[in-house]
Amino acid sequence: MLRQALLVASRSGGARRVVRTAPFTGDVVRRFVAGETLDDAARVTGELTAEGLLVTLDVLGEDTHDKGRAEANVRHYVELLERLGAAALGTRAEVSVKLSAIGRTLDDDYALENARLICEAARSAGTTVTLDMEEHTTVDSTLRIVHELRRDFPDVGAVIQSYLRRAEEHCAELAYEGSRVRLCKGAYRAPTAVAFNDKEEIDRSYVRCMKVLMAGKGYPMIATHDPRLIDIAGALATLNDRDADSFEYQMLYGIRPQEQRRLAAQGAQVRVYVAYGREWYEFFMRRMAERPANLRFFMRSLVGR
Ligand code: FDA
Image (cartoon, rainbow, N blue to C red; front, top):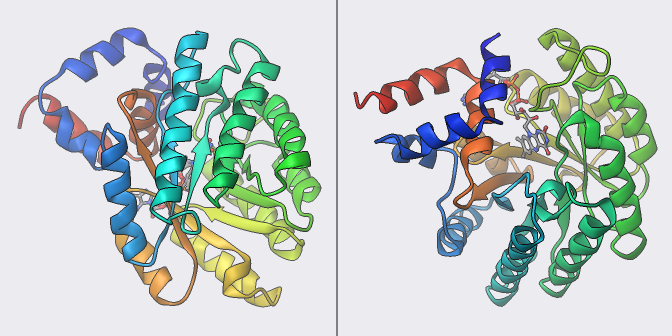
């Protein structure tokens, strides 16, 4: 119930205004959002990579409804990628892109062309792009765009959400040589006709998807903070004779940082998803929806205690 309410609030303009103007939200937001500027992103990327972690950077600004903003987001990604290239960080830091931030709401093909510009900039910087997965209504369009982009940029990453009933089928289709696939549980609202609602069912689906990806020929990216699933991923990697560089773990910036470092110290590849920018509201509210403890911390900050 609470999760659903927070996910509804994540789409509410009124709630956004209250939260953004409330005092003391800054520190709480900074637990999950690296900052508002390119300099903040560059600083955090430098710190994380110096510790042996990999990074994927998300320029916040989803759900864009006009071309001006979509194109500004594309330019920001290109500038970010130039900065990563100049700092020779291309092998350690990539970018994550939401198609809704670069014009999908206006037109699929327009978003595809914008994504192409970002992929070209990523190639020049010696790095890769992963297309985040958003609402269930956009899954087919996102996968179609991934397939289109992979004709020219085979290293474009796809994302599969295990809460969707079709997740395992999509993993089987994507488990081919060179295919980078991030597996997550899914962070949006979705009806039971298309998605599992029960946590145990979502976790069981996650395990089935991992089995397919780990046994396949692609490059699995195991995006979860769930200790049980992380253990199972490790066991499946061993079972399938996978080397440490043939898959990676992924976690969000600010969540289980010690676990990120523990896995990296054991020789695993660990990528931290670093979101930054002024449009942090939706991303932040999804993090609140995932964990009541985060919400209590946030509410205390709103009332200034
Ligand atoms: P879940 O939220 O069920 O938590 C499982 C367990 O993890 C908890 O019981 C606890 O033990 C531990 N844990 C979780 N949060 C913790 C915290 N704050 N502190 C300590 N322990 C904690 N979603 C999407 O729809 N599209 C996308 O493209 C992406 N991309 C993405 C990239 C990356 C790198 C990550 C890590 C996640 C995403 N997600 C996503 C979000 C994802 O779908 C999901 O909502 C969150 O990762 C939370 O799910 P968990 O797998 O962590 O499990």
